[in-house]
Amino acid sequence: MKNLIFYRSLNSFLKQKFGEKVKKIPLDAGLSCPNRDGTKGYGGCIYCDSKGSGTGLYAEGRTLEKQVLYFLNIYKPKGFNKFIAYFQSFSNTYADPETLKNLYDIVFLDRSIVGLAIGTRPDCISQEVVELLLGYVNLGYYVWVELGLQTIHNETLKKINRGHTFEDFLEAYQLLKKFGLPVVVHIIFGLPGETREMMLETVKTLAKLQIDGIKFHALYIPKGSQLEVLYHQKQITPLDKEEYVSLVAEALTYLPENTVIHRLCSEARKEDLVAPLWVAEKREVVALIQKFMQAHQLYQGKNYNS
Image 1: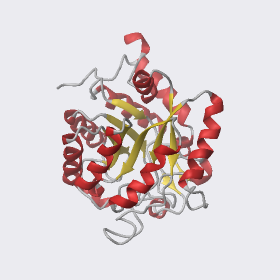
Image 2: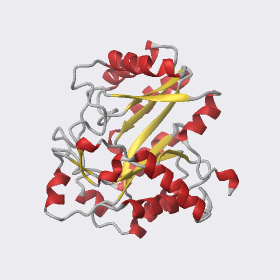
Image 3: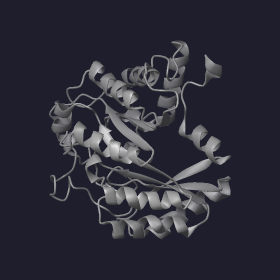
């Protein structure tokens, strides 16, 4: 069983690349999203919460500088010497290049910051954004872009009010890869109307693209989201824990061995959740995935066909 290494984790990848453990620190730059401000739509995707899947620290009045120092002060005493500044909340390429540069320049705040991770949407990637990011690469920082795809199925993207298509994703992905920028793709299991076969088709399609990294999420219902209304109307039934565990375990077998697994399960606090509550038990879910893979002799790349 390959020495019980079931998948290529982000922690092991970063340790191999930098020679020591590296910590990602989540940042909220106070940006918005074209699917919230009226450019594409209002209210965002049906599962979007008020924090834009981030910390919400900007809304609390903490500047980027204060956020960085806050996390450095937490993790440096715990033995971390290198950090990736992760622009997480909302769409972090959704502004003009000058504004974005002023935000990304936060990497210069402390020499322990060795890289940038930029979370955004496929329809917020442009040549100007790519050139800006390449500037940080040329300065020696490790940079990757996280694209929220969620699914390859356009009918599902329309149902969840995503505001972009799979073709939009492919265009952004190809532009980023043309200039050598690593791309991490976010997908969600349990979206309305999707079968197990559809979810795995998304993974198999991304495997053919040989994506650099992936984040798996389980669809959950945040309090105050549009999804909460549908849930109470019994139009949405979240995946149960066992089904999600088996899905992720199987999905990993279709991915190339060099694809970095950035996340196996969503992260949410119980107080922010309507359902399913098991999503708040991330460590348990990860342990169950590993246990399932061991029991069924599964590992990343086992069923990958280049």
